[in-house]
Length: 306
Length: 306
Image (cartoon, rainbow over all chains, first blue to last red; front, top):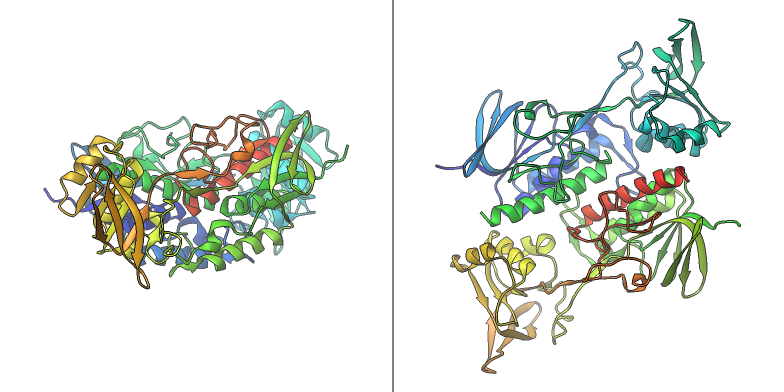
């Protein structure tokens, strides 16, 4: 039988584009499938200052478009389609989309993850105007300001400390009566006069004018409501990997992430995962690009050995 | 005692600059030590087509300079100095250079590796004019041409297959009487009419005019000399990690590389390794950048927990 592509990459964010650039340059026919917008999360972002190579930063859509064009220049094909399933057959694999089926020899999964949202009034409205989801990416913009962090798990507390070290006054708001974060991290929060944790406290709404000016909170036990004046709200209540379509195919963690080894190999030979969907991803553009390259090089070795 | 820096990064190539960008943005005082030229290997390269973000590629020195400037813009300090040793003391670390000692809380090692050279006449002269050391980076330039590969280990054979898939006619030259490469890879070479392996064959010289036109080879057993007409020579006889100064401090592999886990942690708490010096590095600019970011984020967590 004839196989449609050597490589199919699912997702056209940083990780998928990096992978496609490398598989295509290595001489493998490559298709990238994207469900929405080519370029991924970058296309939703403003100034990116932490992707190395741009002295004064670069606008997200500008960077994303350059990446798409770079991959296209190497001969990668792009198609829009929602992947509904993957089948691992003897000697080849099938990728099913809502409109078509494709066959290939190797697959790189790069569908990313999205931050879990609070789902409260004002959250959507103030996205990029005070509400943010990545302390490492966007924290420096809030240096010296009062900021709230939603979520007192390890990542919320660590990101809170991170913001504090930028000079922020940080209030961490947790709906549960206790924090699940590591003690040593919590100790540092409690010892710091510029940090506070409000446990058993629910965020009810984000309020503001042009930008965020505060959040409405409620004490879960007493029902008492109050307002906390902040210029930023970092939402840190978990990430949702976009791996729902894989759950019958591949071993996933309890969080829905894909476990990989250092070559980005999944539990199925010839199927790799790269970027925010893999377990323990640092969730950065640069690490997603590195993952994509790593996966593509390992897949190249695999294909040459078939 | 007062500590000079939160973080010292050794090496200012991609990995070191990415790490510095992240530690500095996270609020940690950061010094990058470089022994020669800031920007590392990029400064020696011409068109870089496989670093994602530049639709038509970017000149190495232009990219390297932008990366240095980007790190400087965040407040990273740079110093020129050859590191002669590191001491891990209780509560802090000492980095010794040929001119000065510095104290710090955490270290990221990012000194890179250099390809082992053949050491034959013409090799230096024709660097970037036909002699190359990275099939993935420079291979596409030789698409469709006759190319020799020095070294029939796994990497030489895999890179030979890689070049072949770009349409090259490939001759792999190995000084030993047998190849150490994986059988399945060798089988593919022997089955391919566009590939040949010359075992027990020594490369004596690289010859050419403006560019490489061939290599002089000698049959080790018979002493017979001949000339092989090629437009490119890929030297694939191993990489030498720049880790000599670490051998008393840290556990290294037999190849001199630094073993790390997925957070780029070495065997010493607070000391991380990133880029080409770490074991199993894919040896790409993009993966070095990803490593630097990963190491910096893990070191940030470590420093906040002290």
